[in-house]
Structures are given as C-alpha cells and as structure tokens.
Amino acid sequence: MKMIDGGVCAARGFTASGIHCGIRKNRTKRDLALIFSEKVASAAAVYTTNLVFGAPITVTKQNIADGYAQAIICNSGNANTCNKDGVEIAEETCRLLARELGISEKDVIVASTGVIGQKLDITPIKEGIPTLVRSLGKNSSDAAEGIMTTDTMKKEVAVEFEISGRVCRMGGIAKGSGMIHPNMATMLVFITTDAAISPAMLQIALSEDIKNTFNMISIDGDTSTNDMVAILANGMAGNHEIVGEGEDFETFKKALRAVTLPLCKMIAADGEGATKLLECRVTGAADEETARVVARSIISSTLVKAAMFGADANFGRVLCAIGYSGATVDVNKIDVSFASVAGTVKVCEDGAAVDFSEEKAKAVLLEKEITILVDLKSGGAGAVAWGCDLTYDYVRINGAYRT
Image (cartoon, rainbow, N blue to C red):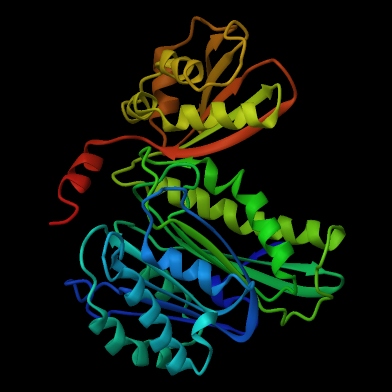
C-alpha cells in the first residue's frame, strides 16, 4: 500500500473535469464537476439520514439500484433541495450528460451542494455539460474544486495496492466544511477504483468503512441534506472479481480506509472558521460502540470546541460530554490527557483533577493539531473521532452564507 498522485483519476479508465458553468456568480470558482469511467462500473453509496434530503439523492438511489454506474456529475452553489421541480432537474441533468457521453441516463450518479431552498436553473448546467465532457482528462483537481462550497482547500487522495498479484489503484475527492455531523457526516465524497468487486461486496465495504471514518466527524452538529459517499469500481485492474469474504476483500477494505481516513482529517481540519484539527482517541472502552459514542460526543461538544480554540485545558467539558453521551461508563475511572507536537499533559485521573502545569497545557493546546486522549479503563475497545475548534469566524461565515 502506498500513497500516489492522481485523486479520482489515479485508477485506470477514469477521467474527470471541472468547469465554471454559471451557477455561481463568482466566475473564478468552478461549479460543475464530472467523473467518468470508460466502462460501466460496480457502484455503491451511502447517504444522509436527514429526513429533509436533496432531490439528487432520490434520483441517484433510483439510478444505482441495480448496482452499476458510469459517471458522477455534481454541481456546487445550489443544493437542489426543497425545490418542487428538484427531481425533474436532477433527472434532466442525468439525461443531458448521458446523451453527451453516449451512455445510459440510469448509469449516472447526480449530486448537488450549496444553498438549500434556492431554485436551481437547469440552463447553466445544460449549457455547461458539452464543455464539461470535452474537458475530461486527468483533472481530478479541477473536479475537486468544482464540488467545493465554503471549503478553503481541495481534498483529494489516492493509493496503490495489490490484489492477487494485480496492481490496483483507488482515489477520492471530497468537499466538506460546514453542516457536518455523524450519521452520516460525509458531505460529498466520490471514490474511484480499478479493482474488480461485485456491487454487493462494494456496498458492504463502504457501509462498514463509514462507521469508523465519515460517521466519526463533527464540525458543528448539523447533518446536511445532501450528504453522499459514492464509489465506482470498474475492474480494469484485471484482478479476479471479489464476490465474497476473504484475503482479497480484506485488502480492498484496507485500501478503502487508506483513502477515506485522510479525507476525514482533511474535512475536519477545514471546518468553517477552524484554526485547529481535533482528534479524540478513546481507549479502554467495554466495546467499540461505547468508544464511538464517547468519542463522537466529545468531538461534537460546542464547549469542548470553544475551549480548544482558546487553548484552555478545561477537562471538565470533556467529562461533561462523556456524561451526557448516553454511553454506560464508570465516571470514576476516566483519565483525560491533551497532546500535540508540544507534548502531552494529563489533566484528569480517575474522574478527578490532577496537578498539571497550566503553562505546558497552554503550549500543547496552541498547536494546530490537538489530540484528546480518553481512557475509560473498562475494557479493550477504542475509537477515534475528528473535528475542529469553534471560532468567531464560524458565526461570521454562516451568518452571511446566502449573501
């Protein structure tokens, strides 16, 4: 397993593009992205659990119900959510793209991101699709830019690995900066691979993976309406198709984790207004679910996030978040420490304060990446969650989001 360049174009048979078509008023920002596979690919996806969800999710679920797709198109600047004609627009987008690519409209994954409840005009998409298709190439970075909203950086990653002696590649792009919270906090993530795997096993791998990756991120406690993780596997690496459990499937899952984990950290670090990446590592839990619940509760706490912004070693906020998490824990056993490149400082032992240097704690918490270490001392299970600090800029960005 090694990291490589190329993003969603690293795998054989995949090309991508990103253009400005006119959805956004700012002409310097790309607002339409495309990922295309030479061959029809196995497809799988997971979606937001919000009862209010975007029209593209309805259409995508219908299109990949058979387990296959060949293209992904996504616009930014408008979520196509809470629109009476939203489904019609999403379906028309699929038809227009399919006609230009010469594929079936049912083999298109469609996604949107941006302002909720704003009418989406199909005209810029219709006029932009021919250019979008002509621009296809090894342009993962352009596609990564085309799906951004309040993101401040592009998010892409790729890995190379072997299955049964065949070199396979997998890559992904993501967008996400606000309205990010578990179940599922994915914003938009698109993954491609040239490994051969059946749709059923691809869905199993993805559904398992998000439990410890995208469902362990929280920026602001808001689960969005358009969250989607989609993956295409076109089989062009030539390995024997993975159709069941076994060594090949385990290798595939490790490769998937090698792609999704860095994307998680990139999303958390790029939280709206964020200045620090937070990682919460819970150990000593009675079981994995307890560890996940505790880690998510801590990383989601507004007060913990604010304390990290202020470099305040207020461990009481961590204990408080554990206490209301709903997990069954022995609060009289909990140890808490804060760590960064500046060192590690223990601030709580057996659920009670310990003497520590406020100066050292301040130095630890002033760093850009902070780890909150929690030992429940009740078992051997653990979990990791990611988030960011809460700053004044978060309110500024969201107070003027539409304007």
